[in-house]
Each structure stands twice: as structure tokens, then as C-alpha cells.
Amino acid sequence: MIEAEIVEDFKAPILADIKYPVSEEYLNELVLEYKDIKEIDLGSETVGEEYQIVLKAHRLVAKQRNNIEKTRKAIKTPAFEFGKNVDAYAKKLQAIIKETEDKLKLQRDRVEQNEARIQREAEAAEENRISNIKRLLNQLKNSPMECISKSSKVIKNVLKMIIVPTPEEFEEFHDEAIIIYKNSTTQIQQMIEHQVLVENAEAVNAEAVNAQNVKREEEEEKFKRDREEFEREKEELAESKKQFQQHQDYVKEEENRKLADKEAHDLMLHQEEEKAKKIKKEKEEKEKQAVSLKNRTEICYIESHEDLRALKIDTYILDLIIENKIRNVRFEVRNG
Image 1 (cartoon, rainbow, N blue to C red):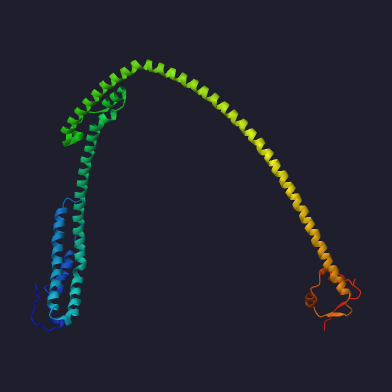
Image 2 (cartoon, rainbow, N blue to C red; image 1 turned 90 degrees about the horizontal axis):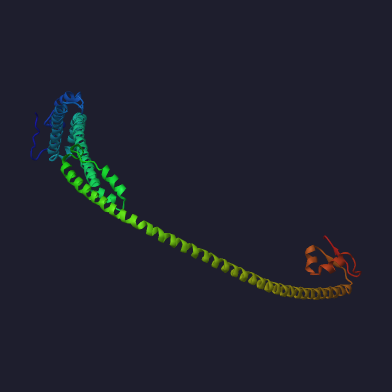
């Protein structure tokens, strides 16, 4: 294998003088050697042997690339100006085997990732198995709690549903399951005995309780009838008050309506009186204006309608003038 030599006070050499620890020919040989490497079958019985081959090949190829990189840095350190050429040649060498390295790395990763997946699945399965067994243990342990406030018949059914734990079901927790089973069934049996005593005592007192209930129902029924009679009388009184109040409201509304009618009539008379005064005053003003116009002898010539409006003559007088009903006043409109 060719080794690169680092020289102190190195002068930038020409490209042909650069020596790397591997040649292009050797790298190409590696590429050809591993180009058609068989793809690993994860389900094969020889997956371990195939993985070792891929692992060895990948480490060899990766080592060559790493050696090339180390040599590149060693050569470039004393000759920075020459660095670009060194880098380019190193990249060229690395490019030769990069695809092969990636291919080998992919094979290696597939095996390692598959082994990791198998390990995770095994751990998850084990965790799930233990979790299921502990769930069954908790159900067995809590079975007496399900019997609280239940009848003896229901509690007996709960006891019948509890099955003796088997080694196949509880595996390494079988001994613990047997202990819990014995404790739980003993507690439930005691609860059945206690509940039977309670139910017998309740049966003895049932008749007395029923008699008390009948008497209480009769008293409640009587109270209900008395209450309904009271409510009926209360509603009748309320209805009488309502009718009286409605009559009072009607009388008041009639008085208010008559007063409003009188005020409206008085207002109308006042408005008519004011209107008559206004009409009389306007008529007097118009008559004064008409008399004033009758005393005029000259003829007024109006050049536009604007001038006619400028005279500010009342429309009543203006109509008289236009109809020639005032003899000594005449208006002519000239165009020029």
C-alpha cells in the first residue's frame, strides 16, 4: 500500500508528485469486488454470516476513504495554495468508492436496524404479556369490591364466575394468583353470609314498613286534596281581584279618553281661530298691495322672469296683474 510522506517546509508540489495511501487502481478493484455483493435476506438462516461479510467490507472501504481524507489534510497543511488541487483529487478518489461504501453501509444498516426492531418487538411483547397478567391479578383482587351493596344472589353469581388460576394463564405469577384467589373467594363467601342475614332481617320488617307506607300514602293523599281545595279557593279570590281591577282600569281609561277628546277639541278650535286670523291678515296685506298698484300709472317693462320675481309681488296680486284685472297696471316682457 502506498503511504503519503509529510515534509516540513513543504513547497507546493505539482499534482503528479502527490502520493496517497491508495491508488485509483486499488480503489477500482475494491469497487469491482463489492459491486455485485449479494443483498442480505433478513429471513435467511445465514444472515449472521452475510452480515459479517458486509461489515468487514464496509470497514475496509470506509478505512480507505478515511486514509485518503487524512492524507489530504496532511498534504494540504504546508501547502495551502495547493489545497484546491489536493481536495479535487481527494474527492475524485473518494467518489470512486463512495457509491460502494454507501451500498455496503445500507446493507449493514438494514441488518442492524432489523436486529434493533426484533429486540424492540420482543421487549414490547414481554411488557404486554406482563401487563395482561397483572391486569388479571388486579381483576381477581378487586372482585370483592364488585359485591359491595349487591344482593346475595348477585354476589353468588360473581363467586361462580371466578375461575381457579392456571399456570398457563398466569405463568411465573401463578403462585401469587393462587394466594389472591383464596383471599378474594373467602371475602366474597363472607359477604354472601352477611348479606343473607341482612336480607332476612329486611324481610321480617317488610310488612311493618309496608303498613307504614300505606298510612303515609293515605295522609299524603288527604294533604294533597286539602292543598288542591286551598289552591282552588286562592285562584277564585285572585280572579275576583283581577276582574275588579280590570273594571277600575276601564273607568280610569274612559275618564282619560274623555279628557283627551276635550283637549283635542279645544286645540282644534284654537288652531282654526289662529288660521282664520292669519288668513284675514294676509287678505288685508294683499288688498293694501293691490291699492298701491292701482295708484301706479307708468308701464313697467320686465326684461326677464328674474326681474319679475325680483318685484316680490304676492302670487295673488301677480295673478291679477297677469289676467289684466288691474286696469292701470300693465306689465310687458321685452326680449331686447
